[in-house]
Image 1 (cartoon, rainbow, N blue to C red):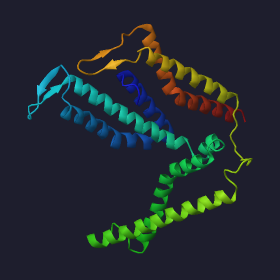
Image 2 (image 1 turned 180 degrees about the vertical axis):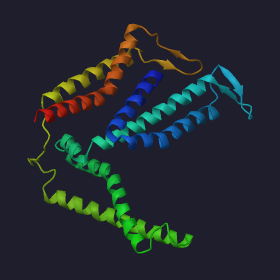
Image 3 (image 1 turned 120 degrees about the horizontal axis):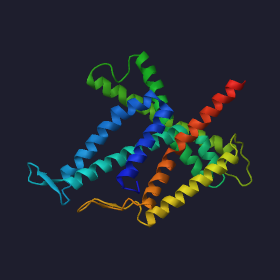
Image 4 (image 1 turned 90 degrees about the vertical axis):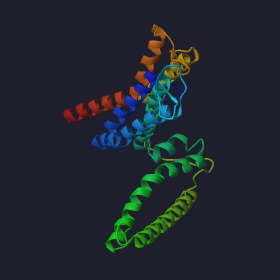
Length: 272
């Protein structure tokens, strides 16, 4: 989101898609083809249709407005950025469970971490409960896909009412449960299966190094890219190239870690 350099956007998008495919397999491929690809095309088309900045005029639209090369490239890059953000957050929801979030921030910001963890897990729980309620309503002939239009609307409102009631009751029960367990009280201990070991230290050092190096590249103009009125970018000298390489390694870090751990797991199983 911060770097509009086309190579940074391509690296981020491809790395996100690769990691998402690694996590979800065929489901991720179907998701990217059905939803992300049309969104990419639509976003890339909309920008040059409404944005007419740029010095390189390729043609004129029926409305008389110019179609510029710069607006087309900017629209495509904006579309790639949008896809990358969505896919990265899709991977985040698959990896970052509520217990991990509470482990990281439970002692620092206990109330906020609980609210955020509940928010993050609300959508998948809501979808699962909606499926259960819909199946139950279908068994008694009251699903929103059956009957006349008026009856479908009535059944849909009934299901929505059930879901809202369930969501409110679930939130109250969770809050009461956490309060009864003393969550957020001073001196309260918490059990966790996670430990900050040597691998975490190494990963943290690597992330800090990449962060500092990338920020240095941004401050010194290594990721500079201008779209309007004409395209202008930083020269491809050794230092800007090194910034892009570090950015590539940072984006591929999740994939590399998972592949390495999978190989170690297979090796350990083979030795049993």
